Image (cartoon, helix red, strand yellow):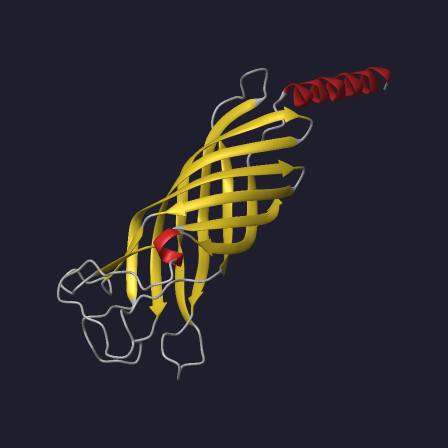
Length: 225
């Protein structure tokens, strides 16, 4: 019995030492949400100029893609670390995989007779490298770059018009994001800057396409487990 107790105590302390020797930078699931602020031309005071030929504006309504206003977003993802930590176990590299990212921005109607806001809706995924720095205790700083794959739906001024020059659906496989996040225990705060353009063509390359800038700044808060 004594040998069993001594062996159990030895194994316990051995496991404890191994756990303590491991880096505190571990993989985990996260969710975060927050406001989405349009930037640049996406938030400018005038409608964006459309880049495709043969696209015209609707009389009395101006160009169809109006400036965006503040919206909101939600991210669900996973931090996956590859290999051991280095720099005395204070730095670790991995992949930031956001497997679901949804957000929207509203826009003020151009027509005085319209009382309901128009909306830009987006959904997609984001993947890219992340470097996590653990300067002290359980404080973590994540620096990441992600490539975004997005689908879009726009409810605009011309939504009820039958003009085939305008498209409601779009896609972009090369949106970009730079992010810095601060974590402590399970709490997470992040600043994200997304930039790129969205091409609206109803996912049909034979249609006229409209390309607009969709840069945003996002302030996200959430939890990581």
